[in-house]
Length: 187
Image (cartoon, rainbow, N blue to C red; front, side, top):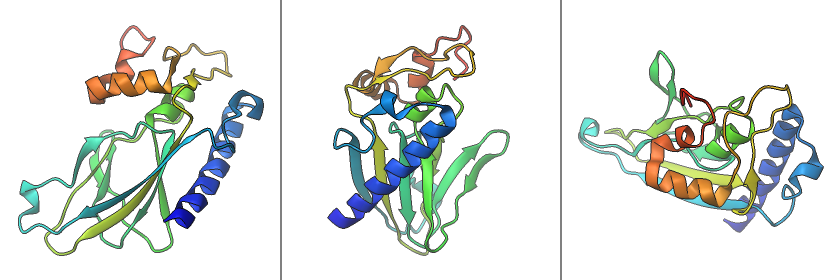
């Protein structure tokens, strides 16, 4: 598990640097990347098969709070993402493939350019499902401020990761709208 977590941290740092490069965020602005001053957590999930899956939920709809989550799935499907105008669609597992879910912190930091993914897990009546999630993000005292490189207006107010976690703990699905700087609160 320690080796897996180290490998996920290395991958997360590479992904973060790629994303920040796309956004135009300099390494000077994000010194926490590549240091031990980050938040990384490994979560092992088990979803037993259920005789009546329509009466059970593996994991309720949510977005991840982190910058992003790197997910390894067993070969049993169950992960679904919400697609606007379509509803929930399955993310079928493929051998040797990892899924990356963008989280709320990246949504805020990118000024909605990388939107957080609403997702859930459903159970089935045939096979158990396992997954390993690695959550990665900046330290809790990090000031998350929307990066506005194209002269657009910030869609969210700046706040620390810890402040956002507190807001989300009390408001779950409505946290982003509570920190929105837009009058219509469309995020």
